[in-house]
Length: 245
Length: 279
Image (tube, rainbow over all chains, first blue to last red; front, side):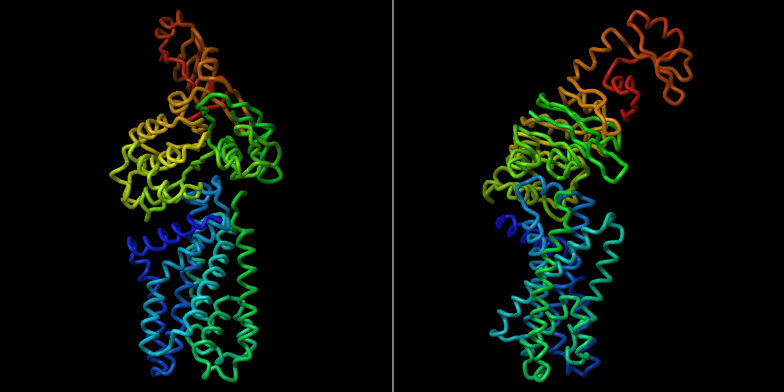
């Protein structure tokens, strides 16, 4: 493990994209903020807390899945991955560094939602730790999924289209912006094929224990699914990264 | 020294990119030369531990690329073909990341990066986002990475492909400042002649010829190249160009016959082996 490289890469590639390319940051915030607006209008404000809670999940998931474009671009187009292969860096260092850069890039959005959440009394201090833990795991799970996608691609021409579709599917379909208990239980399990679903269910269980109430029995299976999916995706990500071909 | 021992690479069941290549690279600067698809990049990627060979192996400074991969990676730097900088990051940031990936401390990485950029007259651009740099400057940053890494062995895969003549000269000048053993690939003859003492010529996955520039050219001692469109006398004919190798004392005679007379250079090694390259 090369923590120095991971930290510097995460900071440089996360922070300087925000600083030198702010349009990317605005683009990453546009969908969750638009959905927050729509959910608030259509539910007359009754689901605003759920839409605020879902914001950080949507931001982290979308930014991490967009990592497929980065990973493919770095490997196929600009060959930065090859540059690092011939060093003492391991594939895990490289993947972890990229994943953490997406978390850094997501920070302004998370802070914005933290402020909104504090204002609308959605987030509390006591919920901060498990929420941060879920966001870190979600970043690892989705960014490893993006490495798998990138590893399967031979050309980069389709990668931006694929990530745009996946980004919408993964952030809008799962119960990110609406209560998970609106869905039949079977559908929740079907949707849990994406790690965003268990992450959202766990989020809602932590933030809205009263509202979730009688549906809380789904929490433990979702926790197990979330952990297993994250581990499987990390394992597969390492297999598909095509480090030394 | 680099010893290549029977390296083959097969990408699918039929296509061999390399066919049992054997060579010992002894000189400080070796150019692997061949046209596009000859197997140059495959060879460099295998030697620099980015790609597994189908069979065979190689030793770099006595270390086996398959058995001692970790140690090999400590003694080499490899600049891949068509590598580009991450546009949004500056040269200094990317050099620091590269050096930290090689195990440098952050302060050491910054110091060595600034020194190398200064050496290559790039210091004033160290903090500019890389997408604002010219093509030649971007390539020089990669050479600066190799310079700063101070690796005993450096692989440069087509370092000047796609650059304009001025940028190419700039990159050549940067490469000449490296004191390590260098293995570079190119399909430009003049580049091989300008930069290297040893040449390994590859075509269709095989070594066509290998030796020092001087020894390879010595086979043409006392000769000149005469060229003419649709000339009647020729040793080689490429498209409608007739090429004839003549003795120096035949020059006047062939000029009268309408031939253009040219000095022998590395192109002629290829031409004589039946391989046509870009020049």
